[in-house]
Length: 71
Image (cartoon, rainbow, N blue to C red; front, side, top):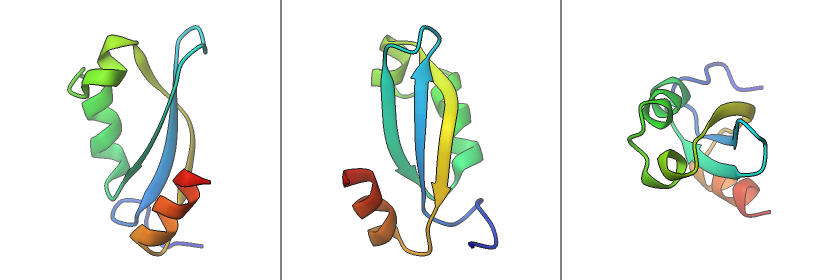
């Protein structure tokens, strides 16, 4: 298990309120990135009102996180 989610590459999934739209992303700072989504700073998620975190999965390396996102 990864010691800290705050700086480790993390795959995350957001959904819209009606749960009809999903967004899957990778970040090294989950707290900051979720705040960016909620403030409407990410064009795609702002357009479709995708702001609710439903899942996250920390990884040891960026390549592991990107491979997981793609799978």
